[in-house]
Image (cartoon, rainbow over all chains, first blue to last red; front, side, top):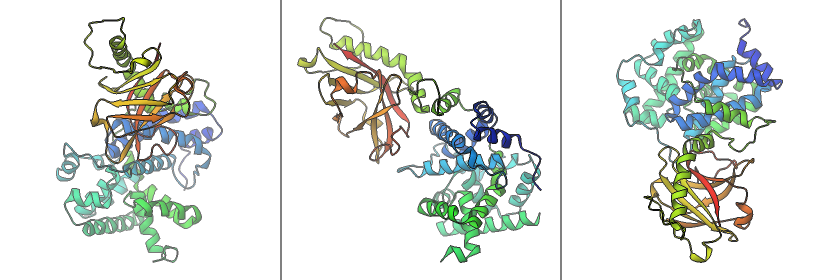
Length: 184
Length: 247
């Protein structure tokens, strides 16, 4: 059931052979998406730039570790970026900046957020459908955790709910999500 | 609760890892376990794939061109000098160079007895008169606003730098300021951490004449307590500026 060869997979394979031109092409094709992911989580352009730089050097260094059978190229690269962002947020004294109340607004308004853009592929449509089937609170908690990199305790303070409650939403939400996706 | 014999727990940890809510030590533990347990790493990969469409739904943002330049400069075998090998230094230098240089000229003019230049200068340097004739000087400015933030000076034979912080607001509690030498044609090297007082000393590994001889610029970055763990600037560059010999 492997999908038709992803051009990014060929570029990664070429990177593993030390092909610099392929790496540049890979960067051009993927950096805006990954920079968007980092900007969304870190909310500071200078940090997002530093993270993006580190991650692409890492992608170059580890291109030979990429296993096409285990993950799609974009999933693999996105995981590298998200992991680095989450590490970054663990630095001492870090606080999620919400001066403009953007996070709260995103939760409270029904302004279309990234979830609304989830139409691109069959997988995306299935995920959207299953997210929509969750209870609203579960969906909000999962979206804030994924898009904005909020931890349990940050979720609790932003959603103004006890920590235990938020943890339960996340856990049950993920369980239901898996059940729904597996059934699809 | 032993995760090895508990598929439900494994599944939950994998899901929360992929979502990002598994943090701190638990996250590190799971990364270690993933390396030794194929089932667990497969569960994580499956969750990452399930959630991946979310990342693709985030609005793309084209990164500035300097990010690619900095990446390229860090690849092995790059012919160009690796001097500005981090985004932070590119950012800092590109924006600061002209402003900081002008500021430095003003500062030098002020302390020079032969140069009664009536230019308005926000910086007043006090250098011990015995060292007037042989001193290294740097004015480090905010790359964005060009506001001078630190003065650094050292007698050419001294083995310590005198640092004066002009704006205490650059300090962040729980973080350290690290001073970097940006040598011509080499990678930035740490000179040490800047103390908390308005005036502090940074002990040099060798006399200034040796440590700063081939160093056209200095920079300050914000680092974790105790300094950068990697030997490179990991935090934002707060100030950058040319370092000149004044004799």
